[in-house]
Image (tube, rainbow, N blue to C red):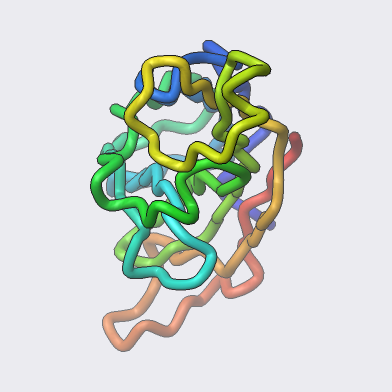
Length: 173
């Protein structure tokens, strides 16, 4: 049985300016105390062609985590536009939320993000740079990639063997 269940993710401030922070309200349940921190990452995928353009927007640690229901807002500054290839600046991309325990990622949830000009006249032209204040981002919904992997437990042996290898994280959007 899973020890962590991500029960809800709410996208806050959507749509918004491209240059505003990303904000996600995450709700998760822990069916038993976790002795160590959960590591959460927010990753902006700068290009579908290469992970070299991915940007870790923020990493936070939550824990130790007592049994029960937990809610927090994960906020991160927008990506560095100078690290996004010009041909990928406008259009659809992905923001990933990942969670790891004891150094092992066990859940990854992706959200489609559409970057475009708020002004319809600007949309009609072939602009591709993210330098204009008229750019906006719209989160188009959950789960381009929703992976639940084996979650390490506090009883994982030093050699990496997990005594509860069937423990997975669950996600509902």
